[in-house]
Image 1 (tube, rainbow, N blue to C red):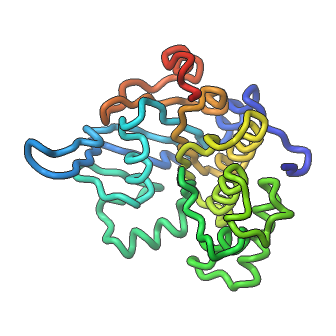
Image 2 (image 1 turned 30 degrees about the vertical axis):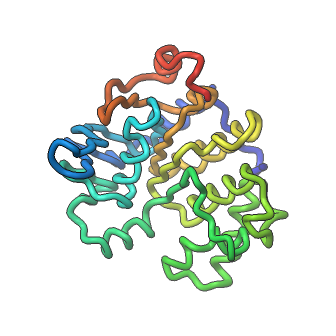
Length: 263
Protein backbone atom coordinates (compact mmCIF):
# COMPACT_ATOMS: atom_id res chain seq x y z
CA UNK A 1 0.00 0.00 0.00
CA UNK A 2 2.17 2.81 -1.27
CA UNK A 3 1.12 6.41 -1.94
CA UNK A 4 4.20 8.27 -3.09
CA UNK A 5 6.59 8.82 -0.23
CA UNK A 6 3.94 9.84 2.30
CA UNK A 7 3.77 7.81 5.48
CA UNK A 8 1.67 8.77 8.49
CA UNK A 9 2.51 7.21 11.82
CA UNK A 10 0.94 7.57 15.27
CA UNK A 11 3.74 9.95 16.22
CA UNK A 12 2.81 12.40 13.44
CA UNK A 13 -0.96 11.94 13.53
CA UNK A 14 -1.85 14.75 15.95
CA UNK A 15 0.27 17.33 14.14
CA UNK A 16 -1.21 16.57 10.74
CA UNK A 17 -4.75 16.71 12.10
CA UNK A 18 -4.23 19.97 13.95
CA UNK A 19 -3.30 21.70 10.71
CA UNK A 20 -6.57 20.53 9.11
CA UNK A 21 -9.00 21.45 11.87
CA UNK A 22 -10.57 24.45 10.13
CA UNK A 23 -13.99 25.44 8.90
CA UNK A 24 -16.07 24.57 11.96
CA UNK A 25 -17.51 21.26 13.13
CA UNK A 26 -18.19 18.39 10.76
CA UNK A 27 -20.56 16.71 13.22
CA UNK A 28 -22.66 18.20 16.01
CA UNK A 29 -24.94 15.86 17.96
CA UNK A 30 -27.15 17.49 20.59
CA UNK A 31 -29.45 15.55 22.92
CA UNK A 32 -29.42 12.68 20.44
CA UNK A 33 -31.68 9.78 21.35
CA UNK A 34 -32.57 6.53 19.62
CA UNK A 35 -35.30 4.32 21.05
CA UNK A 36 -36.72 1.07 19.74
CA UNK A 37 -40.25 0.31 20.85
CA UNK A 38 -42.43 2.10 23.37
CA UNK A 39 -43.33 1.97 27.03
CA UNK A 40 -41.79 -0.40 29.54
CA UNK A 41 -40.32 -2.64 26.83
CA UNK A 42 -38.57 0.17 24.95
CA UNK A 43 -34.85 -0.25 24.27
CA UNK A 44 -32.84 2.98 24.58
CA UNK A 45 -29.84 2.69 22.26
CA UNK A 46 -28.82 6.36 22.61
CA UNK A 47 -29.62 8.46 25.67
CA UNK A 48 -29.07 12.16 25.06
CA UNK A 49 -25.72 12.08 23.26
CA UNK A 50 -23.88 15.40 22.95
CA UNK A 51 -20.81 15.13 20.73
CA UNK A 52 -18.90 17.35 18.31
CA UNK A 53 -16.38 16.21 15.71
CA UNK A 54 -14.20 18.87 14.10
CA UNK A 55 -13.25 19.02 10.44
CA UNK A 56 -9.78 17.54 10.04
CA UNK A 57 -10.24 15.34 13.12
CA UNK A 58 -10.10 11.59 13.63
CA UNK A 59 -12.39 10.65 16.50
CA UNK A 60 -12.69 7.09 17.79
CA UNK A 61 -15.75 5.71 19.59
CA UNK A 62 -15.02 2.99 22.14
CA UNK A 63 -17.03 1.09 24.71
CA UNK A 64 -18.54 -2.32 25.46
CA UNK A 65 -20.59 -4.21 22.90
CA UNK A 66 -24.18 -2.95 22.79
CA UNK A 67 -23.38 0.48 24.22
CA UNK A 68 -24.65 2.38 21.15
CA UNK A 69 -21.50 2.96 19.08
CA UNK A 70 -22.80 1.55 15.79
CA UNK A 71 -26.20 3.16 16.35
CA UNK A 72 -24.52 6.53 16.80
CA UNK A 73 -22.50 6.40 13.57
CA UNK A 74 -25.57 5.07 11.73
CA UNK A 75 -27.53 8.15 12.83
CA UNK A 76 -24.58 10.37 11.84
CA UNK A 77 -24.59 8.78 8.39
CA UNK A 78 -28.33 9.16 7.95
CA UNK A 79 -28.89 5.41 7.86
CA UNK A 80 -31.00 5.44 11.03
CA UNK A 81 -33.53 8.03 12.18
CA UNK A 82 -33.03 9.57 15.61
CA UNK A 83 -35.96 9.45 18.02
CA UNK A 84 -35.12 12.86 19.51
CA UNK A 85 -32.40 15.49 19.46
CA UNK A 86 -30.45 16.79 16.47
CA UNK A 87 -27.49 15.63 14.40
CA UNK A 88 -25.92 18.22 12.11
CA UNK A 89 -23.51 16.89 9.49
CA UNK A 90 -21.45 19.47 7.58
CA UNK A 91 -24.01 22.06 8.65
CA UNK A 92 -27.03 20.01 7.53
CA UNK A 93 -29.52 18.81 10.14
CA UNK A 94 -29.90 15.15 9.16
CA UNK A 95 -32.87 14.73 11.50
CA UNK A 96 -34.81 17.33 9.50
CA UNK A 97 -34.30 15.72 6.08
CA UNK A 98 -36.84 13.44 4.42
CA UNK A 99 -35.54 10.05 3.31
CA UNK A 100 -34.78 10.87 -0.36
CA UNK A 101 -32.92 14.18 0.24
CA UNK A 102 -31.05 12.51 3.08
CA UNK A 103 -29.98 9.64 0.81
CA UNK A 104 -28.78 12.14 -1.79
CA UNK A 105 -26.84 14.11 0.83
CA UNK A 106 -25.29 10.89 2.14
CA UNK A 107 -24.28 9.79 -1.35
CA UNK A 108 -22.39 13.03 -1.96
CA UNK A 109 -20.85 13.68 1.43
CA UNK A 110 -20.52 10.53 3.56
CA UNK A 111 -18.49 7.34 3.23
CA UNK A 112 -19.41 4.36 5.41
CA UNK A 113 -17.32 1.26 6.13
CA UNK A 114 -19.69 -1.42 7.41
CA UNK A 115 -18.43 -4.04 9.83
CA UNK A 116 -20.03 -6.74 7.64
CA UNK A 117 -18.53 -5.08 4.50
CA UNK A 118 -21.89 -5.18 2.59
CA UNK A 119 -20.24 -6.00 -0.73
CA UNK A 120 -22.42 -7.15 -3.63
CA UNK A 121 -21.35 -10.73 -4.39
CA UNK A 122 -22.41 -10.42 -8.04
CA UNK A 123 -20.02 -7.51 -8.69
CA UNK A 124 -16.24 -7.45 -9.02
CA UNK A 125 -14.14 -5.59 -6.47
CA UNK A 126 -13.82 -2.60 -8.81
CA UNK A 127 -17.54 -2.58 -9.56
CA UNK A 128 -18.31 -2.62 -5.83
CA UNK A 129 -15.97 0.31 -5.24
CA UNK A 130 -17.48 2.26 -8.14
CA UNK A 131 -21.01 2.20 -6.67
CA UNK A 132 -20.83 5.56 -4.81
CA UNK A 133 -19.55 7.25 -7.96
CA UNK A 134 -22.29 5.74 -10.10
CA UNK A 135 -24.91 6.87 -7.57
CA UNK A 136 -23.52 10.39 -7.89
CA UNK A 137 -23.85 10.22 -11.67
CA UNK A 138 -20.27 9.53 -12.79
CA UNK A 139 -19.94 7.84 -16.22
CA UNK A 140 -19.10 4.15 -16.08
CA UNK A 141 -15.60 4.50 -17.50
CA UNK A 142 -14.66 7.32 -15.13
CA UNK A 143 -16.17 5.50 -12.15
CA UNK A 144 -14.22 2.33 -12.94
CA UNK A 145 -10.98 4.22 -13.43
CA UNK A 146 -11.31 5.89 -10.04
CA UNK A 147 -12.39 2.63 -8.42
CA UNK A 148 -9.29 0.87 -9.70
CA UNK A 149 -7.12 3.71 -8.37
CA UNK A 150 -8.81 3.43 -4.96
CA UNK A 151 -8.18 -0.31 -4.88
CA UNK A 152 -4.54 0.28 -5.73
CA UNK A 153 -4.37 2.73 -2.84
CA UNK A 154 -5.44 0.02 -0.37
CA UNK A 155 -3.04 -2.53 -1.85
CA UNK A 156 -5.52 -4.42 -4.02
CA UNK A 157 -4.57 -3.19 -7.46
CA UNK A 158 -4.26 -6.80 -8.62
CA UNK A 159 -7.76 -7.74 -7.38
CA UNK A 160 -9.92 -5.38 -9.42
CA UNK A 161 -11.64 -8.21 -11.31
CA UNK A 162 -12.01 -10.53 -8.30
CA UNK A 163 -15.42 -11.34 -6.86
CA UNK A 164 -15.86 -10.76 -3.11
CA UNK A 165 -16.19 -14.52 -2.57
CA UNK A 166 -12.67 -15.01 -3.94
CA UNK A 167 -11.15 -12.57 -1.44
CA UNK A 168 -10.12 -13.09 2.17
CA UNK A 169 -11.96 -11.30 4.95
CA UNK A 170 -9.16 -8.76 5.25
CA UNK A 171 -9.19 -8.11 1.52
CA UNK A 172 -12.96 -7.65 1.54
CA UNK A 173 -12.54 -5.14 4.35
CA UNK A 174 -10.05 -3.16 2.28
CA UNK A 175 -12.46 -3.20 -0.68
CA UNK A 176 -15.09 -1.72 1.65
CA UNK A 177 -12.63 0.96 2.74
CA UNK A 178 -11.79 1.80 -0.89
CA UNK A 179 -15.53 2.13 -1.59
CA UNK A 180 -15.92 4.56 1.33
CA UNK A 181 -13.04 6.73 0.10
CA UNK A 182 -13.56 6.70 -3.66
CA UNK A 183 -15.96 9.66 -3.93
CA UNK A 184 -13.84 11.80 -1.56
CA UNK A 185 -16.58 12.37 1.05
CA UNK A 186 -16.24 15.05 3.70
CA UNK A 187 -17.25 12.63 6.48
CA UNK A 188 -16.10 9.02 6.71
CA UNK A 189 -17.51 6.69 9.36
CA UNK A 190 -16.05 3.24 9.94
CA UNK A 191 -17.36 0.33 12.01
CA UNK A 192 -14.38 -1.77 13.21
CA UNK A 193 -12.19 -1.19 10.11
CA UNK A 194 -9.27 -3.26 11.49
CA UNK A 195 -11.25 -6.13 13.02
CA UNK A 196 -10.35 -8.65 10.28
CA UNK A 197 -6.77 -7.49 9.81
CA UNK A 198 -3.49 -8.58 11.37
CA UNK A 199 -1.37 -5.97 13.11
CA UNK A 200 0.71 -4.96 10.09
CA UNK A 201 -2.24 -4.58 7.73
CA UNK A 202 -4.26 -2.86 10.45
CA UNK A 203 -1.52 -0.25 10.85
CA UNK A 204 -1.34 0.26 7.07
CA UNK A 205 -5.10 0.73 6.83
CA UNK A 206 -5.03 3.26 9.66
CA UNK A 207 -2.16 5.14 8.02
CA UNK A 208 -4.27 5.33 4.87
CA UNK A 209 -7.44 6.40 6.70
CA UNK A 210 -5.49 8.97 8.69
CA UNK A 211 -3.87 10.38 5.56
CA UNK A 212 -6.93 10.44 3.30
CA UNK A 213 -9.73 10.81 5.84
CA UNK A 214 -8.64 14.02 7.53
CA UNK A 215 -7.26 16.14 4.68
CA UNK A 216 -9.01 19.17 3.18
CA UNK A 217 -11.31 19.53 6.16
CA UNK A 218 -12.64 15.98 6.09
CA UNK A 219 -13.54 14.21 9.33
CA UNK A 220 -13.24 10.57 10.29
CA UNK A 221 -15.23 8.73 12.98
CA UNK A 222 -14.16 5.17 13.80
CA UNK A 223 -15.86 2.62 16.04
CA UNK A 224 -13.25 0.25 17.39
CA UNK A 225 -12.29 -2.20 20.14
CA UNK A 226 -8.70 -2.32 18.87
CA UNK A 227 -6.44 -0.51 21.34
CA UNK A 228 -3.50 -0.99 18.97
CA UNK A 229 -4.85 1.80 16.76
CA UNK A 230 -5.80 4.31 19.47
CA UNK A 231 -2.72 6.45 18.81
CA UNK A 232 -3.98 7.30 15.32
CA UNK A 233 -6.84 9.29 16.85
CA UNK A 234 -6.99 12.90 17.97
CA UNK A 235 -9.64 12.20 20.58
CA UNK A 236 -11.49 9.16 21.87
CA UNK A 237 -15.11 9.26 23.04
CA UNK A 238 -16.09 6.54 25.47
CA UNK A 239 -19.69 5.31 25.40
CA UNK A 240 -21.62 3.24 27.92
CA UNK A 241 -25.33 2.44 27.98
CA UNK A 242 -26.10 4.89 25.18
CA UNK A 243 -24.27 7.82 26.75
CA UNK A 244 -20.93 9.52 26.11
CA UNK A 245 -19.20 9.14 29.45
CA UNK A 246 -15.86 10.72 28.62
CA UNK A 247 -13.97 12.35 25.75
CA UNK A 248 -10.21 12.41 26.09
CA UNK A 249 -6.79 11.56 24.74
CA UNK A 250 -5.72 8.22 23.27
CA UNK A 251 -3.49 7.52 26.26
CA UNK A 252 -6.29 8.07 28.76
CA UNK A 253 -8.65 5.81 26.83
CA UNK A 254 -6.07 3.03 26.61
CA UNK A 255 -5.47 3.19 30.34
CA UNK A 256 -9.18 3.04 31.15
CA UNK A 257 -10.02 0.29 28.65
CA UNK A 258 -7.60 -2.26 30.03
CA UNK A 259 -5.84 -5.11 28.23
CA UNK A 260 -9.02 -6.69 26.87
CA UNK A 261 -9.90 -3.73 24.62
CA UNK A 262 -8.12 -5.14 21.59
CA UNK A 263 -10.30 -8.23 21.48
